[in-house]
Image (tube, rainbow, N blue to C red; front, side, top):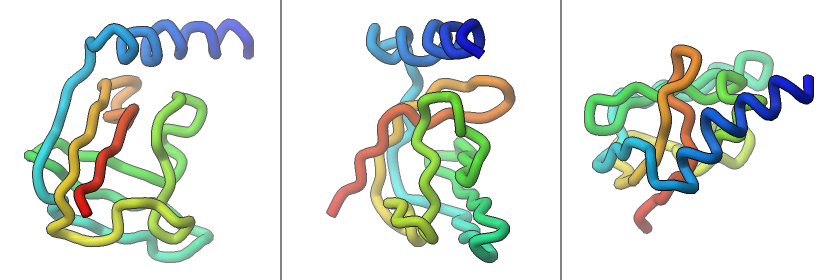
Amino acid sequence: MLIQDIQVWHDLVEPYRRGRYLTAEGPVEDFVPAASKRNPRESFTVDGVPFVLGGEAEGFYGYDRTSLFGGAITENGMSVRICYIPYNGINVILRLDVEN
């Protein structure tokens, strides 16, 4: 497990700290809220980039809190800026800024 944690740190956290990440900015679109606490998966796009919350980024040091559990993304049209890195088939959110 320690080796996996070190690998994830190397692949995600270090590039983020060095500014080597992608950015998606604009309104939240295609928001699909979690069906229930038993199935907390949510999805949405920003600037055409797909994101999934609800367990996919767990263990990857990424933002993964759904609206059912107090997450910041709650509806379409919200203006956001997301710093992310594609990793293991998902876009891991490393920073999320939501405009009030």
